[in-house]
Length: 205
Image (cartoon, rainbow, N blue to C red; front, top):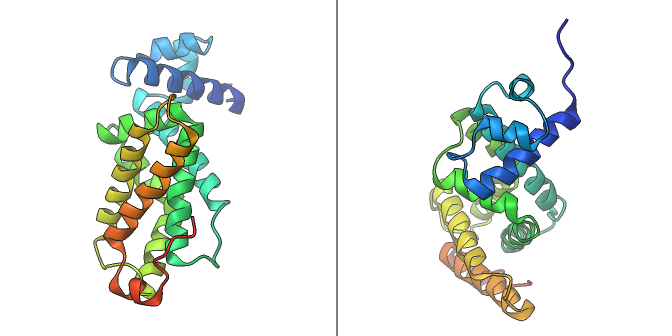
């Protein structure tokens, strides 16, 4: 008789993996260590995640889902293109600041291309709001027709740049300045001349 898999046990394994992946690095963390951290045997871990890659992918999908749920809760169809991008920018930064382990893990596996191809495709579904903002911007002629993957890459890299400047000793005022100014740099790079002429290029953040 097959053993039933418990959702809470799966969560414990993912929590343990996140902790160790951030502390030691994905490559230097074994599944045996993850099982031990979760207070379980390696055999039980493999019932939930047959391979280490399955665990890596499941964890990044959890991070993507939780981040997207937060940002989707902030977005509204009534927002302008600029305000949609501002909401995505600010929402992502503040979520990462509130979840530093998730940020560290996401950056680690993204920068090292550790995520499986299937998980990459699946994670894109959680970021429909980004594609919707790009489509809105193109339809309204508020952003330049750059390749969508290039705009996404620049958005990610500039968020990383701001995150690297914000540390435990950063004052609240300086943190807010980095968030606002960082967005201005990003937005000024993609906004179109039509956005300038319409006046929708001005910040509301």
